[in-house]
Length: 365
Image 1: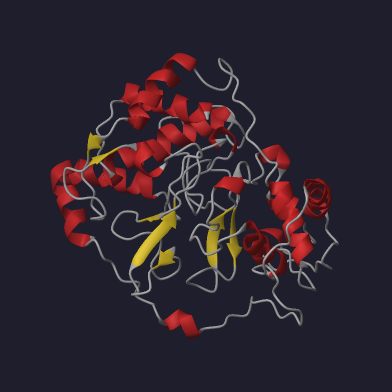
Image 2: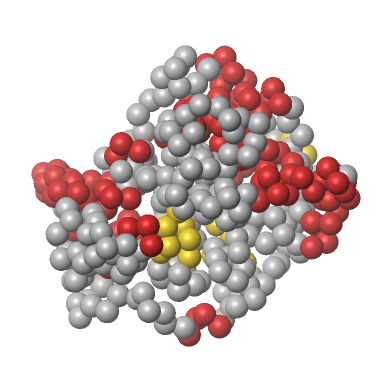
């Protein structure tokens, strides 16, 4: 799922009312050819910004790992857990990230176990694949071992590379030394133990609705895709991209008109300079990890980094604004995420009842 930094779902959902759905989709199709170039590629390829780590040690994240025994891997899990919560392991300095400015942080600061190993915030991070800085939503680590590549732009092939980037970035953990290969392997082993707790039927989701929602989720429907990624009349289901047991195809997909913010954060950009977009996130544990999209623009209006995002839909005055869990997730899904995909992105034409069923299925994962 990709999104915009200022409620793209609400903004674009008002335009079809004025233009008519057919005219609006025609406009989008003409405005968004299948190959949209990144306007600043390759300009930023040669730019080195102020937030790159300046460490004397060597990056070991892509070195091959030893053939650990099972006993050694168990030891690595314990070591990785200790490292995950440590604010001193790499000589962390005060972070320069706006939301954690001046804090000495650990992995767990942003990947909070109490919040689904996320924090519900959109941080300024650096460097990313195509830009020196970008605003990126903290992804959950639940089931993360099965969802490579990593990063919203898929820039890191392994958990070791992903962890190393967060450790050394001045905008994140701001380490004073490079992590060792064993430390990175230990973090990866620990993250491999993080699994999604089962959703509680009748409390976190409605089982009857979820059963109907799963059928809708997996059944292809003819769609209109203004990005040109899928041809007119293509049969597409939610499960087309959110595929397999971990609900991701591991690929980048475009948004509407362009993916992301072309001047600031286009996501992944191909070798020819064409915007590929943002990688499909897993849906596992989704009930614990609102808000949604790469920039956190689908969800709770009180999230400190979300600016105008979330909370302007029909459920915006419900209780638990600023809360956590399935009630907040349900509101985000029904007000932001599902309406966006149902109209602007794919024009699935689900009814309100079907959208409610889909939401309950997603909450059950």
